[in-house]
Image 1 (tube, rainbow, N blue to C red):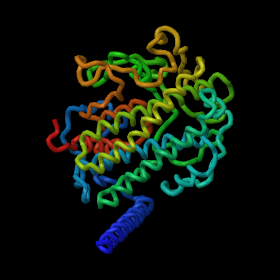
Image 2: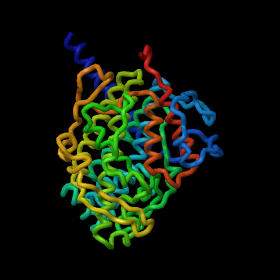
Image 3: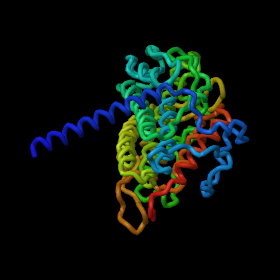
Length: 413
């Protein structure tokens, strides 16, 4: 009997090793597979850049832009679709965070080396950062450079893991390299490298600040919330220096850094909701485990940035290029402030959940699953992240979002 048990253990260990080797092999294929495009047939799709904002989330039928069916391998079709959308979201997040990392993150080579393995042509050496911008960002917390570095590394690890997992199951993966066409900042510290996202024309939604402090409102129940920084949601604002000329005056430099601070939290609160929203649609327990495990780190990111945004100095500035005005109010004063809105209340206040007949409870919000992927895509588009992107890019992401939203758990209620 002992020999049989030992044989079983050895067999199990061999199987585990073979699986790890297979995943590592698949991971290398993911890194090397740079020409993948989900739907070659969408190149001529007539979807205007920015038109994503007009999408009707109630229309859940597959888009007419859909090309050939994607391979889901041994995964359920819906699980593969959800993972593909999340892979795309993580790639977009990585692109955002790499731009912040180059300018204001810790300048070791850990992040740049990892990025160079995933993105063709990305420099493996750190940029050295931008001292003026970094100093302004550190007004929100002296450890901001470390937090930016670690958040960037996390997002890169998320995208490569999800793609590697898809590949290990024989499912199609996601690659957005074709769309790295947007210009970089020309300020000191920025790599001159094509980007997926635009951090210089943002309209940042800061209603997450009031939403997470509300003791009665929940977007899942139809409630809306005021902006914490109203001027940041109007017009287009830069969260990084476009050139070194943006750093000539201390006040505008700080306004750029403050914009970044609130943008950090906006990006991560989206992931905080997206993972539990889509987790309600998966079939596989293992895929559910992936979503719950990665989603938990998004929550950790959000709470960190929620805390730091509250330290943004009270400044007002006029953009010397666009003449757009931004004003960061004292968040501890009227019309916010008070017991419910003070800046150190960074944990979700108990609020309504499922129905207002139940007692208030501290929760992530929103978590309603209907139209979750398209809602996330709509929010990122409204943020201005994709200004300058191609029609093909919008059509591709819309297609991924529709597929994810069409996924259904068996016997879903």
